[in-house]
Image (cartoon, rainbow, N blue to C red):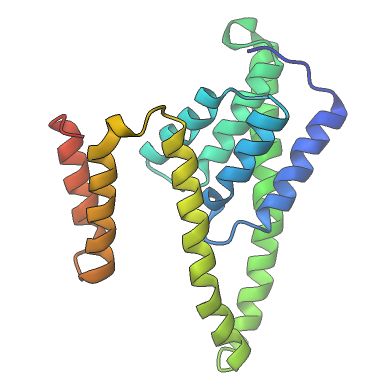
Length: 198
C-alpha cells in the first residue's frame, strides 16, 4: 500500500492520537476500535490486515501493551514512504510515524495520570474518589469487549472459529467465578494452540 501524507495529515494523526490518549481508560488497547475506524475505514492509511497484524504482533511480543501503537504508526509511515522496498525514505517516514503515534498517545494520558494520581492519593478517603474507581470498571470491560469484537470479526466467518469462542467463554467464566490465576489460563490457551486444537 502506498499513499501520500501531507503535513496536515501528520498533524491530524498526531491530534487524533492525542484525543484517544485521554479516552484510553483501561489501557491503549481499549481505543483500538476507534483507531480502526480512523486509520482503516475513514482515512485508508492502513489495510485491515496491517491493523490486526500490528495488534497481534505487539500482543505476542514481550513488553508493554502500548507497543501496538508504535506498530500502527510504523505501518502508516511505511505506507507513506512507499513500502518496505522504497529505501531510506520509507524507513524515515516509518520512524516518524512511530514518534508521532507514541508521543500522541503517551503525552496527555501520562501527564493526566501523574497529576490525577497524586491528587487521588492525597484524597483517597473522599466518596467521589471511591465512586469514580468503582464506576470505571464497567466502562473498561465494555471497551475491552469492543476491542475483542473488532479483532474477532475481522477474520471472516465466525462459525469456523467456534472452538475459540468456546475457549473464550470458558476462560471468562473461570476468571469471573474462581480464584484461578489468569497465567494458568494463558498457559492452557498457549498449549491448546500449540497442539493445534484452537
